[in-house]
Length: 114
Length: 112
Image (tube, rainbow over all chains, first blue to last red; front, side, top):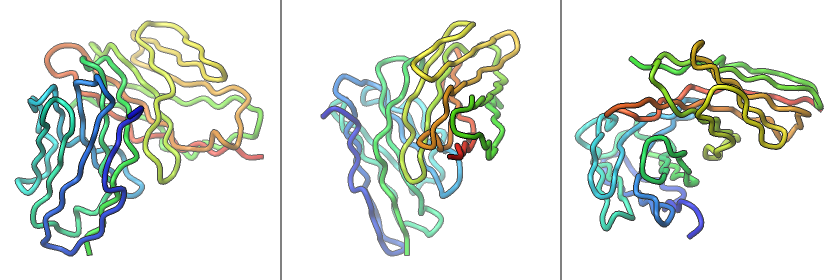
């Protein structure tokens, strides 16, 4: 597609359930980023992929969070045993190779934990 | 800790005026600078990128970079109510750790 695609756009789940969020980057973009943004707050970096490798996982808030990327394309962010504090908008961005390339964002997944 | 700082605002300007948004950064080796616009409930959208000292113009937007002062700004000429949004400054540096560092954003309100 023309832009970064994220699914689902909204997810409501019960505390303790696992969730999977998907990101399909812009074709040809080798770098992929996950961010989290709570209401009225700034962007919180979670993880960065270059190809299928994740050289920077420093932002993952706990071991309940994991992410993978396959085929240098689609990425999945998984949150296990969700907690209410996980409620936020999860944003994915992609860019061409190199940190000097601008990032382009998807529309995000709004996650609500009941 | 590398930081990017922005005045949170809100910055309020009348329609037709020039809006000036400012950003300072702490990492002297930063080489790439980006301005994003984020409407309420939407994702950030790239407006401008700038890499060299001086001004870069794109339509009503001008980005200004001064590496010596570690300062980057965004000017919006002929501000419109549709420009009302939060403007995010993002900076990265050189070397092995070139992760984008994001400011918290400046809220701009353009009043008709």
